[in-house]
Image (cartoon, rainbow, N blue to C red):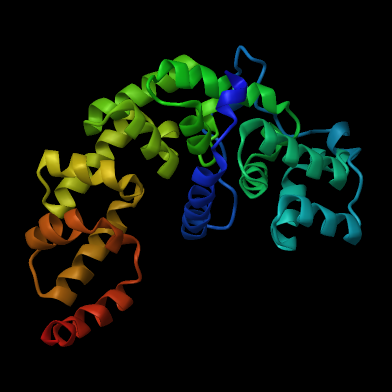
Length: 297
């Protein structure tokens, strides 16, 4: 039921939101856009993606005062610069009062059973879809997806949607088809595929041939067996969306730091600790040089 779905999610989403904010810092400060073509998608429940205002509608949006800008910052829990960009990109938000935005964030949090911080984070990334639409549509979409992914719960779906709203904004058949593809490509369960999408929303937006091409590049660069590449992506899906050039550069640096060939770096270092690919390699170098001193103790 909807009531059962909206309980006991806040604790799970708190950690996820922190991870998502760290990933957003790596990818850039601009909020990610939804997949191409999603603007024409709709749910049977009535959730629709909203196009930006154009022409007279955009021109009719009022200017924001410094006091209102500060109030928007408080409602969305964002710094001034981020909110200013958000309002510049989506002038229809100026049709709302800051108090309305605050109320809608609280309503979204209550309906989905997430913390106010998680709801504000979602609204800051998809303002038109969440601030201008009833949250009950999201909850209904989450329940429908959870029912289709049994034994996955609605709570898991909501937690994943905090970073991948397309799970709820795209038509259900297309989402299920893509999740089934992730299960097949990387030998995981539907529940695990949902977790992978939460960590790497590009799994929903990128085309199937592109994902398979990326997986092939990952295997080739790090000299991985197919099953090892599957397990690596299943555990750390964001590595799939690093560019081949960056992966090659990181491989060469790790080879120089550890004085190992590419096969050892790929099959041992990267396979067992893929987080190294997202770390500052200068820090990795210093830690590696200090490792013998630690082992002597």
